[in-house]
Figure 1 (cartoon, rainbow, N blue to C red):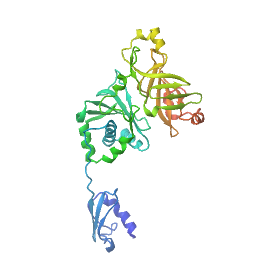
Figure 2: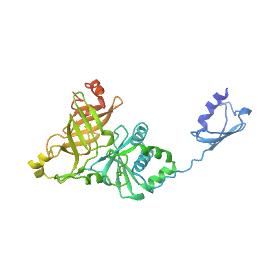
Figure 3: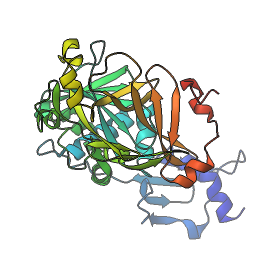
Figure 4: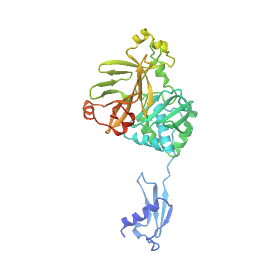
Length: 360
């Protein structure tokens, strides 16, 4: 038996034992060749062992000692907070959170802010934060409190997974030393459309909505379009541009604002308000049929179908889905007119559940 073949037999054993007796199948004790005996030191950073001692009939393994991490609960940036939560949830709960973390290797890690409705069963306070990295896996969290005692409630869609404080998350991650992973991941985080947003450490996500208000009744402040939604999108026969605070469709510009929940039906019927808000849309983040996106409605619109624009991927390319709230996919928009023309009549199997043009 060659030395290479011998190690193929022994290596599976090395992974589970500290000291093993070298055996030749079921023929008895194997005498290790003299030139293999002695102490061997590994310089491979990926190896779980840093020293192997081989004698005539035994192999003794010395595990590497992995130093604990040095993450601190003090002065956490919003981006670091998102990275901490994502890595913690991926290691603690696996599943969709682990997939989101893996997808972030090849994409940015985006955090969208979803406004709660009255029927929401989510714990915590303020917005629901949805984390995605190119694929909508509905990995979400909510917050309660501040500082190292701030509590994070973790979800996959509306399924509650568990909760932990910032301090508990730090201890967990330091035990497995995630310093390098956190440092790398936080550079890829964008929150509510900005890589410098303050939306994760506390519930400062409301700041944007509470500033830049107009004197229009019901205006709760400008809406910030998440960064990964911005830019020009093309369908087969039209194009739309999303900027930080507006939507431009075939040259017609609409400003995007949050709308106060107490905007009344009487105000909606006011001709004066209707005239003033012809180019302002009520906007927030929402979820429809498993797709998270930007909800847009006419400022004074009460009945009738509204529109949700949701990010998705088809053919390995980012697409923007135009979904009607009454049910049905209306359009699939692409980043280039060439792609829009190429796939204009393509039916995508994963969109059939939406109905509309996907089911035609």
